[in-house]
Structure formats: C-alpha cells, structure tokens
Length: 186
Image (cartoon, rainbow, N blue to C red; front, top):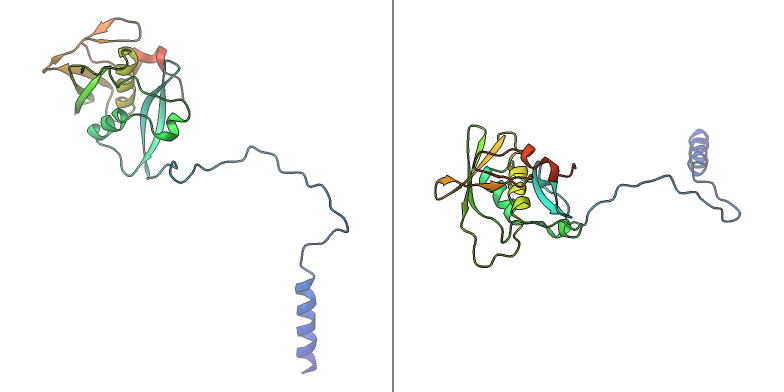
C-alpha cells in the first residue's frame, strides 16, 4: 500500500511539473515570420475536387482564373460558367467580362480537338463592344481544357470572322496563341 501511495504522489508531481513555466512580469513575444495563409470566407471558398479555368478581364487584359467545381465540366458547362461572368469574389479583385453585349455564344461542341462555338446575332442591349477581348476570353477558356486545342466560331452554320489580338479577322479555328499578347500569365 505504501508503494502505491509513493507511485501516486510521484505521478502527481511529475504531471504538475510538465506545465508551461510562468514569468514574474510580462514579456515581449516576437510573432513568427509570415506571410500567413488566409482562408476565404465560406461563401467564396472554392469547393469541389475538380478545377476549371475561366478567362476573365482586368485592365483590358485576359486573366486565366482557376475555379473549383464538383466535377470536370462538359464543354457546354464550361462555356456556360464563362458566360455567367465573374463570381462576387472575382469581382472584388476587379475581374470582369467583355462578353455581355459583345458576343452571344449559344452553345459549344467538340470534334476531335476543335471546339465549335455557335454565336447568335448581337442583341439590341449591347453593353460592351470589345469583341477582341470577348472572343479571346472564349478561346482562352476553352483551350485551357485538355481536349481542346482550337476554337472555331459559327453563325447560322457558317464560319464567322472574329477579331484576333492583332486586329485581323479570321474565319479559321483560333488558338491561345492568337490572343497571347492579351493574356496575363497566372
């Protein structure tokens, strides 16, 4: 019994000795070096296991933006996400879209490694008219996919001449290099 009591007292002494030492007076504590990672608010935090790239606009430049999504998007989903424009969090970083009023993309398909985007006639409510950035956003976004290397634009089933970064019009399929001077690296 004596031995048990000795062990219990020894254990209590050992446990109380494992605390944080106290100081007699306050002392200055230096914070660790940063930067520290921050987390986005819950409503703007990325979700989903897959990523997609949408190309938005800031300061008349095309900016690729990674978004988290639930699953890899179909070509139609990807185009629809681009057409929806920037999220609130993206707008807070001055990202916008040149698409409203400039290009009315109605749908997309993939044949081989070429995306075909059907473009409707512009509506009467045209807001922006910077078609170079608008078409560049579509090409940049769709060619960010592993299954697309070029994008052809069609209106009423016929090739549509669209502006490239150099100002020339092309009815041929376009690639990211056609808009490279306008694309800001990530």
